[in-house]
Length: 149
Figure 1 (cartoon, helix red, strand yellow):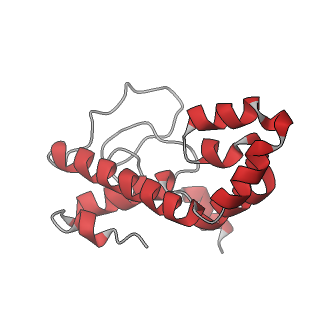
Figure 2: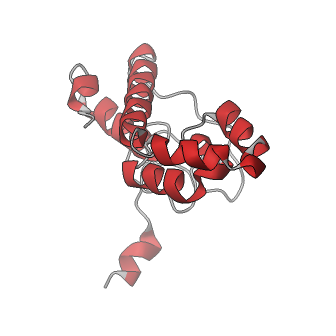
Figure 3: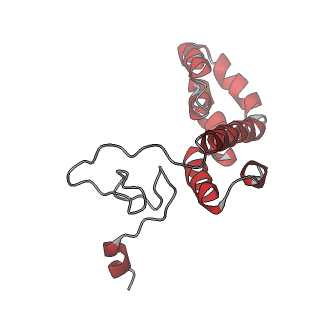
């Protein structure tokens, strides 16, 4: 099991929030990986899930033989470890990027008329985002508070 504390030990609270927001978006689920290997492994979908596109294409090309299906049933046993390895590499990459930036998010994109912006860094954000992808600040949605009542 991945322990994000290892990657966030030298980060301040702002950086840690930014890390968790980015890692939550990048991480993959072990159960989904196993299910994809068992049910759609003959098409290589489990490899595409972990961004191993070369192997996914290879499985797809040879799917008519049935061999990729048999291999994927064996690979289903190794998928939890592969997903954990993928998540660890993503966590290390994200932590490295945050620490390399000195804790400052990248410069905000040019303002887009009508698009929602983060109040903390003025970056353009997705309308349904809970956290800013640039600075990790929590996004307040005025219409969400009204519907929660």
